[in-house]
Image (tube, rainbow, N blue to C red; front, side):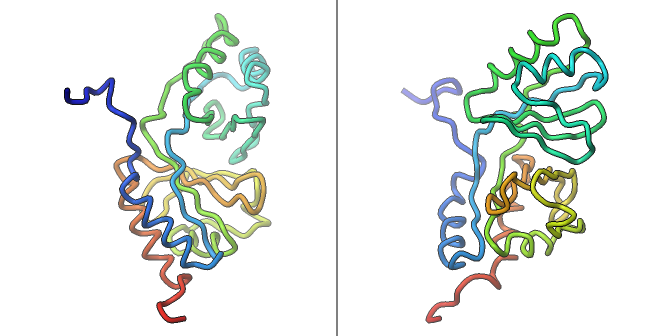
Length: 205
């Protein structure tokens, strides 16, 4: 019997590129690490940051929704990314979408809140290693120096002319998450691999 949409196994947008990302990581000899982090739960939340719902939702999620622009708060397996004065992206492990949505809705109660599952909208690329910032700087106009864009910072920006959400992970060695629209993920992967060429060991070296 042919697989149906409900029975077919999930396939990430970059499943066919996993071997290329792994090969680049291997041949960079520790300079960079590239990988897809597929199927992360991503829930967009909009509410009044000064209203009762903000505190209630934060309590339910076990983290305070960040109020400072372009910052990230992480607690346990959940990460809250600031997108605007009244908008956040809550990122969780694969399979947690429904639970995250439920916790937010129940905590908000009768308060005005918008909760939207956008998990299928984007995939996530991990860019890490000592040369990660140099690699990203090839195609991003932001100042990525650690003093400016260190752990816990985020930005909606463009990388290689592609709109992304860039997140500096909470530990320096953890690198960056690059959240990119699934339809642009292949293009961005090609660009990253091409831009990483100078960090890869050449045959015979």
